Length: 208
Image (cartoon, rainbow, N blue to C red; front, side, top):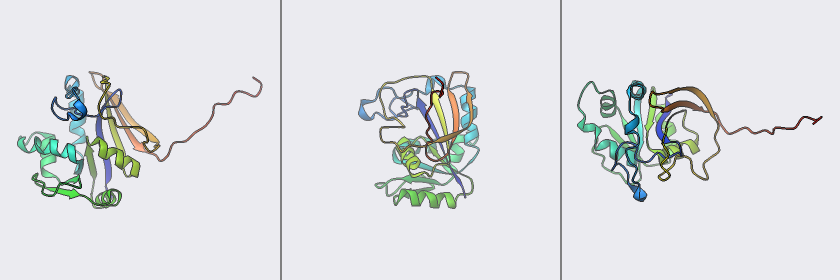
């Protein structure tokens, strides 16, 4: 059975919207698109290249899928580790409205998300990777079907935009499995899902 592994870029205030370009996602009048660009360096590139050495298939939300489908099929350099995997491997897009995807190798997932993704994991030999797709990731976390989350936190606060964790998120505990920082200050942390939070109380000593 495969593992569902998510990689997401967020700001210090939890925004994931439009990391890659000015016009990538302007919903809500968002004017801060492209906030990842100033922090791209060799450390960042090496981590992303490493992630793209491991996928067996991809699962994407509709908005991220549309952004990727308009860009990556045009990147034909066989030495590009991201393009070669995205263009060649199976892609699944969660959507109730997309009916005829043009990107080769795409299958639309439109049924019960929990059941569909569990079935995808069962027939995937390796990593089923989610990139971006913040709204989809929230749903997958709530369903408990995510195995690993690579969260790349960038040293910038934007003050607006779509955030990963919002009011009403399902309480979830994570196990930290690894971390590093890039030369430009991006914190790369990996977490495995570990069920629900645990709680306790700091008691005063009895003789206080």
